[in-house]
Length: 491
Image (cartoon, rainbow, N blue to C red; front, top):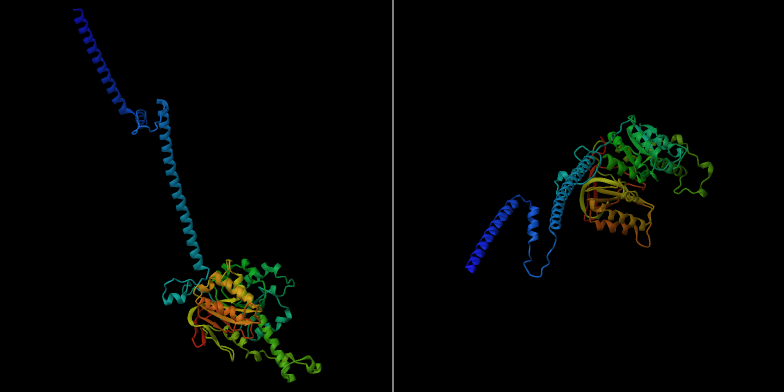
């Protein structure tokens, strides 16, 4: 009985205990499920991490206490959210900066395009272009600004943007211009006592600005070349000059003005004689008359008696100088509103084809040394699809080779469609190369049509050669060549 009682009691206790345990587990599980439903993702991840076991035995297990695990996960989640927000903000800022930079670049490009169209004169044209586009280059129809053709009674202004000459050296030139029926206005800078080119940059620039602004002046003739034009380029008022286009003529150091006014203002200028040129022509004429009176072929001090060396200068007529090639070119050029057509050459001279071919474009250029000196500046010659002209005086062949090499490395010979070579005066051959080798080498390397013998530069003959207007050059296989000016230089 005792054993039966004990067994029954034990069984009852066990059943009661198991029932209580089962009920407790059920309550706990129910409570856990309810609590789980209200848990955050971080708390759920904490539970998963707490009871996680490696899939493969031997893997490392991160062991943290409950609170450490929760705090670690919370911190990790916060860091991920912060990182995500930071990335989004960075991406947004980058996009804003990129958009801002793009807008600025676009705005700058737009302003540059407008400036190029309104102010600068470039010769760029599309890679594929129609004949009309090639003719026009980047200059829109009618956008090339030109000075007016002169008539008797108009005023010619004389400026000295480069070197000076003594007053008595250009008095005859002033008299000559007046004999043609023109008024003459001489800038103060031409007769100032301070002859320092270096210290007078602003004054010389201001004198040129005033001549363009002065409505009583119809054309501008430079006193002489020499040195100093490139020094005044920064002081010129290009916006004002573009609004008051006038004929400006000169050569040599005046090349800096030709290029700057073309690039900055879109003004057609003329490579031609200066005041000093007419003084030289007058002096030469007087000398010829002197020799003629003495019936001498060569004037030498030993063969002349002082009492026979008298000439009445008042009897000299400037009309007697009218047969001179340079004077004729000047007189006809400044009054002409028609295209020049095929250029007139001095008696006995011919153009020569150096590299065969034809080219059509706007003529621009000048003295070789000055063109090279402008490379790398804001005034350097662009000349895309243009016809390049250059001349030189008094340089050694190795220096000419160096100058040609600089223009080659700059890409100028690649950009132009043709090359014209003017007067090459008093240049000397070097041990390293001859003048002809230096010129022909780069001309042939460029592979562009090339003509030599253009009567413009420091030689005895200096033609009226307009810059900025359309021209066509033809270099034939038989060595002959032609140059035709297709567009009027003046209005």
